[in-house]
Length: 261
Image 1 (cartoon, one colour):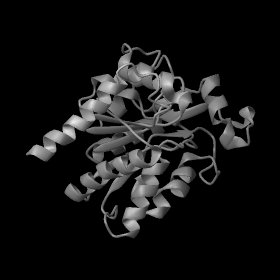
Image 2: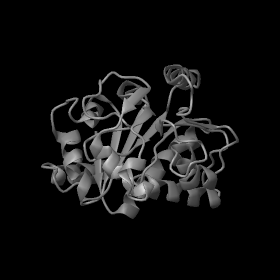
Image 3: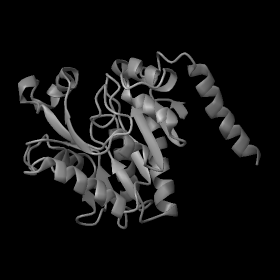
């Protein structure tokens, strides 16, 4: 796990660098997209690069992490709508290239199985972007989730619903109680993972994820078992890391090694 600490702007550009490098090498890459505030700097940087002609998503495909159950596709808080507003409408994905789980399906279990099958049929996800919840969830894999889980229906915790109420006019009761989410096992199947966290509220979850024991109590700790994870943090989100100075030195040292070659 590589941990990079910097300003929000710097980590946005670094995240965009990772996407750009992949798309340059593999224009038809399969991407995993997350909603929420954490990835916005990366999405903004990528949109600017598309406008400048530096990168293209025209041949790429993408799968989103999760979706609320019961919200119609056009609802302003549905993740299909949010990812379009925040990112996909600002870059050059082909029509139909971005898929999400169907939270309106009559048979939710069948919709989850179909989503897993679609990811597999695409060849798996090359690069997955993630945020992290204050309770350590990734996707909507709440504390207690199986570390080998696949796409399924989950019940949201009261904490997650409180955290997300700001998107629903601060009305907790308006936040759906259930969602469809890629499982932790699904996420770990991605060939590369980028996790972004900003703000003091994420500091404890980040510390547990990077330095705590692997535990279903903090689902993001499962990322310790993945061979290629980059964690992008601002100073506030990194503030509880015991080894923060080491991570800074390791990142600086990596660039010194590269420059000497």
